[in-house]
Amino acid sequence: MRFGKNSEIVFLSQGKLPNETNQETIKTMKHEKQIQLIKESLNDGKRVFMTPNKVYEVIKDRVGQYLVKCHINDHFVGLHGMKNTDCENEINYLCQDDGNPYPVTIESKENDLVFVETIKLEKLARYC
Image 1 (cartoon, rainbow, N blue to C red):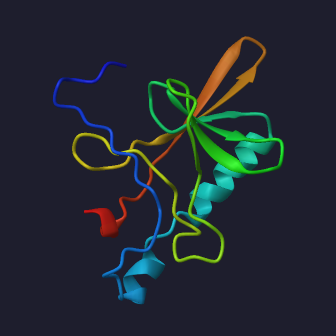
Image 2: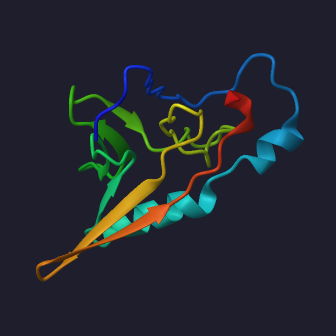
């Protein structure tokens, strides 16, 4: 996949912004089910990608951390926010041109066939 000249990928890091006080909003911005599905998929030997061009892949490292790896520069970031923070259940996602998250794709292989499942992510209001 090639990006147009006006394309911009913004990698969002998870953390509480200093001016955030509305805990009700924070509680509604979760990706708990998607995080669980991604982790289960990796544990089942499937491959998970954060962008359609497969540049950003979710991996599980040797100590059990779930990370997003950029295949261009070999940089890593956690799949989601740190435990015991307000971002623990929010995925670090990549934005499309329109500001919406790219869908996550899960690939599995069986014999010579590749099966692809797509998971839509909810846009987090704190980044709008």
